[in-house]
Amino acid sequence: MAEQIWNDFARLNAGERFRRQSAEMGTDVTRAIVAAAHIAPGMRVLDVACGAGEPAISLAELLRDTGEVTGVDMAAGPLEVARQRAEQRGLTNLHFQQADVHALGFRGESFDRVTSRLGVMFFGNPVQALGELRRVLRPGGRVALLVWGGLDQPYFHMTIGTILRLHPEFEIPPTARQMLQYGEAGRLTSHLTEAGFRDVHEQLHHICWDWHGTPEELWDYFRSITMPFRPLIEKVADNAEVNEAVLASMREHYDGEYVRIQAQMVIATAERS
Image (cartoon, rainbow, N blue to C red; front, side, top):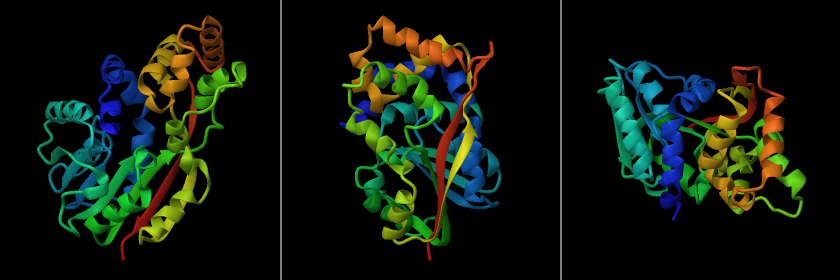
């Protein structure tokens, strides 16, 4: 079921239509997790829930002549996009495969680093999945995870927050609550510790999440790509009042070229003993 959701045609089509803008929007987020991973020449890196390719592509470019990167995701559709992007960049040290993070098909102690950008919050059993990440790490290996903070931030204020202000009777879908679970300080640290990691560090970061385009484009993109909120968004799909209120909120952040947004993300790192 989860694989079907992330392979959703509308989502993949929106990702293709807004590929350039989406990639630019996530640039600083990718840089943040790559920096947190502390990559060194010759390393073997696993990127989990890599989706359409980041940060696996950035990691492979960093290790182009010295190391190797494997990107895994449970959804075949985004992986095909990732493969195409890697081929366009001539990255021969990057490989993708479909896999479930709860049962990774790799030998233990196979990787020097494991990364995951905006994926951990969707793991069905986080502690079990994090235990798998620990299993495939070599002793002294490092995991770097980046997840969304809470609902109380600009990107969600102007979108979901607007819907809830106009329709307080609506509830946040369970999938969205799952997506935002690590906005609770210490929760990701607790899961990493329970999975057996040591030297766990968790920090909330404010990272540029600017949209290079109009508010109308951003709202179209958000509605198509943000699957966890889809049950809520579908309730107001043809609601002119909601649409105009969302666009009015976005215009407050629009400078004529970008919708300027600071996203709140949690970055956690830990090591395997």
